[in-house]
Image 1 (cartoon, one colour):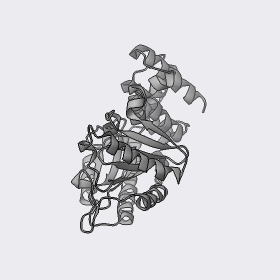
Image 2 (cartoon, helix red, strand yellow; image 1 turned 180 degrees about the vertical axis):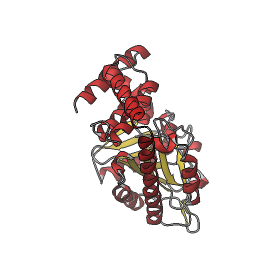
Image 3 (cartoon, one colour; image 1 turned 120 degrees about the vertical axis):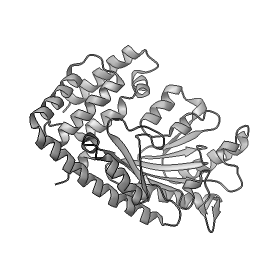
Image 4 (tube, helix red, strand yellow; image 1 turned 135 degrees about the vertical axis):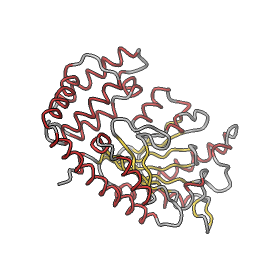
Length: 332
């Protein structure tokens, strides 16, 4: 039986949109009026739909920007745009509207677990209201016009973050990558295109955005995710059955480090939390997978500085991380 909750970490649906007759963001440097116009349009749409906070990249600290990036609220591209980048973050619904990123608007909904339809519902409501309140760059043949040609058409990326330690350890991931590519999908790292997979975390998302409907894209991603989860479960069962004692020892040692270490680096934390998550999935440990996933989001370098109230040296940050990890695991 497949334990989907121990494999599927989160779901995201993102739409790329641009305002008609305003140059793409890469051409907006030195054009504050046009940049502010895009921000005001997004604010007006959000005002009519949900409560939110607006953050301009040039008004928040480096730590806060990178912490948002570590927690997947904004992209690395937006985090680096301190001239005219901004984000509207919904208070209750997992929505973040990135403004003046690669496109004028990157509207995304991020939820824990497997929630493609729910994410799409929220983000589609934003898109409908945006189309009512502004003229969107659109071509009858090409669909929605975007800064990068790979987003033409629907402008939609539907992605699911998966925890795939067994497929990685058994070197079967290459077969999975080949499989998803044949389905018009792609496998990316934890922060999307161009990033590395850390902690055995991989994003499965659609690669094709043109010539297919949004609903068909969602269905294609969902079908692939189900098949990958089945393969991961089989690989987990296989490696556990092959050497049960070694697996239990490795998992228990990792838990011991997380429970008793007085300082732990980001790299060491990622190694051991991944091992503990695998042990939890295999029922070697009795811990909460959502808690462990949330802890992973909280323990990035910038997120630790944000949690601790400001910039701090690495040793102090590592000590604070160890303290946070101990307290969260002991709450079980």
